[in-house]
Image (cartoon, rainbow, N blue to C red; front, side, top):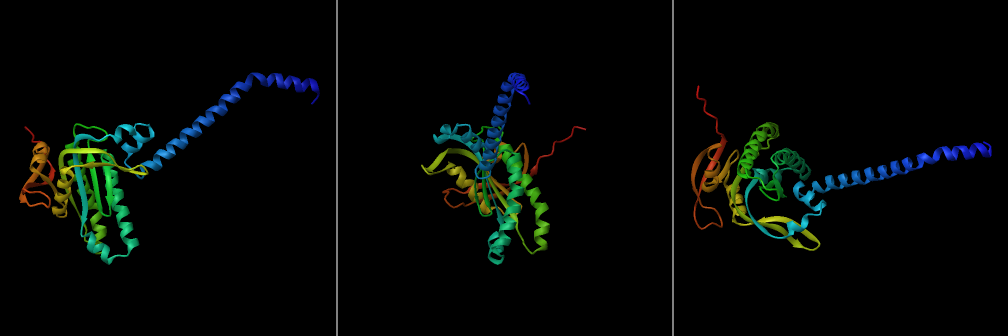
Length: 257
Protein backbone atom coordinates (compact mmCIF):
# COMPACT_ATOMS: atom_id res chain seq x y z
CA UNK A 1 0.00 0.00 0.00
CA UNK A 2 1.52 3.34 -1.06
CA UNK A 3 1.42 6.45 1.12
CA UNK A 4 -1.49 8.00 -0.80
CA UNK A 5 -3.69 4.93 -0.33
CA UNK A 6 -2.78 4.69 3.38
CA UNK A 7 -3.82 8.30 3.94
CA UNK A 8 -7.06 7.68 2.05
CA UNK A 9 -7.89 4.67 4.27
CA UNK A 10 -7.25 6.66 7.46
CA UNK A 11 -9.52 9.46 6.23
CA UNK A 12 -12.19 6.93 5.28
CA UNK A 13 -12.20 5.34 8.78
CA UNK A 14 -12.33 8.63 10.75
CA UNK A 15 -16.16 8.97 10.65
CA UNK A 16 -16.52 5.44 12.07
CA UNK A 17 -14.25 5.97 15.11
CA UNK A 18 -17.10 7.30 17.36
CA UNK A 19 -19.25 4.29 16.41
CA UNK A 20 -16.44 1.93 17.38
CA UNK A 21 -16.00 3.68 20.72
CA UNK A 22 -19.76 3.57 21.34
CA UNK A 23 -19.85 -0.17 20.60
CA UNK A 24 -17.03 -0.81 23.07
CA UNK A 25 -18.80 1.24 25.73
CA UNK A 26 -22.04 -0.65 25.09
CA UNK A 27 -20.28 -3.98 25.43
CA UNK A 28 -18.75 -2.88 28.73
CA UNK A 29 -22.15 -1.74 30.02
CA UNK A 30 -23.74 -5.07 29.08
CA UNK A 31 -20.87 -6.93 30.72
CA UNK A 32 -21.35 -5.00 33.97
CA UNK A 33 -25.11 -5.58 33.89
CA UNK A 34 -24.69 -9.32 33.35
CA UNK A 35 -22.21 -9.41 36.21
CA UNK A 36 -24.73 -7.60 38.44
CA UNK A 37 -27.50 -10.04 37.45
CA UNK A 38 -25.18 -12.93 38.29
CA UNK A 39 -24.44 -11.40 41.70
CA UNK A 40 -28.14 -10.98 42.39
CA UNK A 41 -28.92 -14.58 41.45
CA UNK A 42 -26.15 -15.87 43.70
CA UNK A 43 -27.26 -13.64 46.58
CA UNK A 44 -30.89 -14.80 46.24
CA UNK A 45 -29.75 -18.37 46.81
CA UNK A 46 -28.68 -17.53 50.34
CA UNK A 47 -31.23 -14.92 51.49
CA UNK A 48 -34.83 -14.16 50.56
CA UNK A 49 -35.14 -12.53 47.10
CA UNK A 50 -37.06 -9.54 48.49
CA UNK A 51 -34.26 -8.76 50.95
CA UNK A 52 -31.54 -9.41 48.35
CA UNK A 53 -33.11 -6.92 45.94
CA UNK A 54 -33.37 -4.27 48.65
CA UNK A 55 -29.68 -4.73 49.51
CA UNK A 56 -28.52 -4.58 45.88
CA UNK A 57 -30.64 -1.48 45.25
CA UNK A 58 -29.09 0.23 48.26
CA UNK A 59 -32.39 0.23 50.16
CA UNK A 60 -31.17 -1.88 53.07
CA UNK A 61 -30.94 1.19 55.31
CA UNK A 62 -34.70 0.98 55.78
CA UNK A 63 -34.42 -2.70 56.68
CA UNK A 64 -32.00 -2.05 59.54
CA UNK A 65 -34.49 0.09 61.46
CA UNK A 66 -36.86 -2.06 63.49
CA UNK A 67 -40.49 -1.64 62.54
CA UNK A 68 -43.76 -3.13 63.73
CA UNK A 69 -46.08 -4.83 61.26
CA UNK A 70 -48.75 -7.49 61.16
CA UNK A 71 -47.47 -10.61 59.42
CA UNK A 72 -48.68 -14.15 58.84
CA UNK A 73 -46.13 -16.78 59.89
CA UNK A 74 -45.99 -20.32 58.53
CA UNK A 75 -43.88 -23.05 60.12
CA UNK A 76 -43.52 -26.45 58.51
CA UNK A 77 -41.54 -29.57 59.23
CA UNK A 78 -41.59 -33.27 58.52
CA UNK A 79 -43.21 -35.71 60.90
CA UNK A 80 -40.95 -38.73 61.31
CA UNK A 81 -37.77 -37.00 60.15
CA UNK A 82 -35.83 -37.54 63.40
CA UNK A 83 -36.35 -41.32 63.25
CA UNK A 84 -35.53 -41.32 59.55
CA UNK A 85 -32.29 -39.34 59.98
CA UNK A 86 -31.18 -41.60 62.84
CA UNK A 87 -31.43 -44.65 60.57
CA UNK A 88 -30.35 -43.13 57.23
CA UNK A 89 -26.90 -42.28 55.99
CA UNK A 90 -26.16 -38.52 56.16
CA UNK A 91 -25.89 -38.27 52.37
CA UNK A 92 -29.25 -39.98 51.98
CA UNK A 93 -30.89 -37.54 54.42
CA UNK A 94 -29.34 -34.62 52.58
CA UNK A 95 -30.70 -35.84 49.22
CA UNK A 96 -34.18 -36.11 50.69
CA UNK A 97 -33.95 -32.60 52.18
CA UNK A 98 -32.84 -31.17 48.85
CA UNK A 99 -35.85 -32.66 47.08
CA UNK A 100 -38.21 -31.54 49.86
CA UNK A 101 -36.75 -28.01 50.02
CA UNK A 102 -36.91 -27.68 46.23
CA UNK A 103 -40.62 -28.52 46.12
CA UNK A 104 -41.53 -26.32 49.09
CA UNK A 105 -39.28 -23.53 47.81
CA UNK A 106 -41.12 -23.37 44.48
CA UNK A 107 -44.38 -22.79 46.33
CA UNK A 108 -42.85 -20.18 48.64
CA UNK A 109 -41.65 -18.31 45.54
CA UNK A 110 -45.03 -18.72 43.84
CA UNK A 111 -46.84 -17.04 46.76
CA UNK A 112 -44.00 -14.52 47.35
CA UNK A 113 -43.31 -15.51 50.93
CA UNK A 114 -40.20 -14.40 52.80
CA UNK A 115 -38.06 -17.31 54.00
CA UNK A 116 -36.77 -16.52 57.48
CA UNK A 117 -34.74 -19.67 57.89
CA UNK A 118 -34.16 -23.33 57.10
CA UNK A 119 -33.48 -25.59 60.08
CA UNK A 120 -33.01 -29.14 58.83
CA UNK A 121 -36.50 -30.27 57.85
CA UNK A 122 -38.07 -27.13 59.37
CA UNK A 123 -38.82 -23.98 57.38
CA UNK A 124 -40.16 -20.62 58.62
CA UNK A 125 -41.89 -18.33 56.14
CA UNK A 126 -43.78 -15.10 56.68
CA UNK A 127 -45.89 -12.74 54.57
CA UNK A 128 -46.41 -8.94 54.46
CA UNK A 129 -42.78 -7.96 54.97
CA UNK A 130 -40.50 -6.60 53.60
CA UNK A 131 -42.98 -6.25 50.71
CA UNK A 132 -46.47 -5.40 52.04
CA UNK A 133 -49.43 -7.44 50.78
CA UNK A 134 -52.99 -6.91 51.98
CA UNK A 135 -53.92 -10.58 51.48
CA UNK A 136 -51.07 -12.04 53.55
CA UNK A 137 -53.29 -14.43 55.54
CA UNK A 138 -54.93 -15.78 52.38
CA UNK A 139 -51.57 -16.23 50.64
CA UNK A 140 -50.19 -18.10 53.62
CA UNK A 141 -53.05 -20.58 53.89
CA UNK A 142 -53.23 -21.14 50.13
CA UNK A 143 -49.52 -21.90 50.13
CA UNK A 144 -49.91 -24.31 53.04
CA UNK A 145 -52.71 -26.18 51.26
CA UNK A 146 -50.65 -26.49 48.07
CA UNK A 147 -47.71 -27.75 50.13
CA UNK A 148 -49.85 -30.63 51.38
CA UNK A 149 -50.96 -31.38 47.84
CA UNK A 150 -47.30 -31.49 46.80
CA UNK A 151 -46.57 -33.89 49.67
CA UNK A 152 -49.17 -36.28 48.26
CA UNK A 153 -46.94 -36.45 45.18
CA UNK A 154 -43.71 -36.92 47.17
CA UNK A 155 -44.87 -39.47 49.74
CA UNK A 156 -45.47 -42.53 47.50
CA UNK A 157 -41.80 -42.64 46.43
CA UNK A 158 -40.67 -42.17 50.02
CA UNK A 159 -42.95 -44.94 51.28
CA UNK A 160 -41.49 -47.34 48.71
CA UNK A 161 -38.17 -46.80 50.52
CA UNK A 162 -39.81 -47.23 53.95
CA UNK A 163 -39.51 -43.51 54.64
CA UNK A 164 -42.75 -42.72 56.50
CA UNK A 165 -42.61 -38.93 56.44
CA UNK A 166 -45.41 -36.39 56.29
CA UNK A 167 -45.79 -32.64 56.63
CA UNK A 168 -47.13 -30.72 59.63
CA UNK A 169 -47.83 -26.99 59.33
CA UNK A 170 -48.68 -24.18 61.77
CA UNK A 171 -50.09 -20.81 60.65
CA UNK A 172 -50.65 -17.70 62.78
CA UNK A 173 -51.15 -13.98 62.09
CA UNK A 174 -50.17 -11.17 64.45
CA UNK A 175 -47.85 -8.24 65.04
CA UNK A 176 -44.08 -8.64 65.12
CA UNK A 177 -41.00 -6.46 65.27
CA UNK A 178 -38.94 -6.83 62.08
CA UNK A 179 -35.46 -5.68 61.17
CA UNK A 180 -31.82 -6.65 61.15
CA UNK A 181 -30.34 -8.52 64.08
CA UNK A 182 -26.74 -9.55 64.61
CA UNK A 183 -23.53 -7.57 64.55
CA UNK A 184 -21.52 -5.58 62.03
CA UNK A 185 -19.90 -8.57 60.33
CA UNK A 186 -22.96 -10.82 60.21
CA UNK A 187 -26.56 -9.66 59.99
CA UNK A 188 -29.86 -11.49 59.58
CA UNK A 189 -33.21 -9.95 58.72
CA UNK A 190 -35.58 -11.41 61.26
CA UNK A 191 -39.01 -11.22 62.90
CA UNK A 192 -39.50 -11.26 66.65
CA UNK A 193 -42.76 -11.61 68.57
CA UNK A 194 -45.23 -14.02 70.14
CA UNK A 195 -46.80 -14.73 66.73
CA UNK A 196 -43.61 -16.56 65.70
CA UNK A 197 -43.75 -18.72 68.83
CA UNK A 198 -47.44 -19.40 68.27
CA UNK A 199 -46.98 -20.60 64.69
CA UNK A 200 -44.02 -22.73 65.79
CA UNK A 201 -45.95 -24.38 68.63
CA UNK A 202 -48.95 -25.03 66.39
CA UNK A 203 -46.61 -26.69 63.90
CA UNK A 204 -45.22 -28.91 66.67
CA UNK A 205 -48.75 -30.08 67.48
CA UNK A 206 -49.78 -30.67 63.86
CA UNK A 207 -49.96 -34.26 62.72
CA UNK A 208 -48.90 -35.28 59.24
CA UNK A 209 -51.34 -33.75 56.77
CA UNK A 210 -52.63 -31.10 59.20
CA UNK A 211 -52.51 -27.29 58.98
CA UNK A 212 -53.20 -25.90 62.44
CA UNK A 213 -54.15 -22.30 63.13
CA UNK A 214 -55.57 -20.37 66.08
CA UNK A 215 -59.04 -18.89 66.54
CA UNK A 216 -58.06 -15.29 65.73
CA UNK A 217 -56.29 -16.20 62.50
CA UNK A 218 -59.06 -18.58 61.46
CA UNK A 219 -61.70 -15.86 61.93
CA UNK A 220 -59.91 -13.82 59.22
CA UNK A 221 -59.86 -16.65 56.66
CA UNK A 222 -62.96 -18.72 57.47
CA UNK A 223 -64.80 -17.42 54.39
CA UNK A 224 -61.98 -18.87 52.27
CA UNK A 225 -61.36 -22.29 53.82
CA UNK A 226 -63.01 -25.32 55.34
CA UNK A 227 -61.71 -26.29 58.77
CA UNK A 228 -62.48 -28.51 61.71
CA UNK A 229 -62.11 -27.48 65.37
CA UNK A 230 -59.71 -29.65 67.31
CA UNK A 231 -60.28 -28.12 70.75
CA UNK A 232 -57.94 -26.26 73.04
CA UNK A 233 -54.20 -26.90 73.01
CA UNK A 234 -51.84 -26.25 75.89
CA UNK A 235 -48.85 -24.84 74.06
CA UNK A 236 -45.43 -24.41 75.64
CA UNK A 237 -44.78 -20.78 76.54
CA UNK A 238 -48.45 -19.75 76.51
CA UNK A 239 -50.26 -19.24 79.81
CA UNK A 240 -53.71 -19.87 78.32
CA UNK A 241 -54.93 -22.75 76.21
CA UNK A 242 -55.23 -21.93 72.50
CA UNK A 243 -58.35 -22.84 70.52
CA UNK A 244 -57.09 -24.49 67.35
CA UNK A 245 -58.50 -25.43 63.96
CA UNK A 246 -57.28 -27.82 61.28
CA UNK A 247 -57.61 -26.28 57.80
CA UNK A 248 -58.75 -29.01 55.43
CA UNK A 249 -59.19 -27.22 52.10
CA UNK A 250 -60.49 -24.24 50.18
CA UNK A 251 -64.20 -23.61 50.57
CA UNK A 252 -66.22 -24.46 47.50
CA UNK A 253 -68.37 -21.72 46.05
CA UNK A 254 -72.00 -22.75 46.27
CA UNK A 255 -73.89 -22.68 42.99
CA UNK A 256 -77.30 -20.96 42.82
CA UNK A 257 -78.45 -23.34 40.12
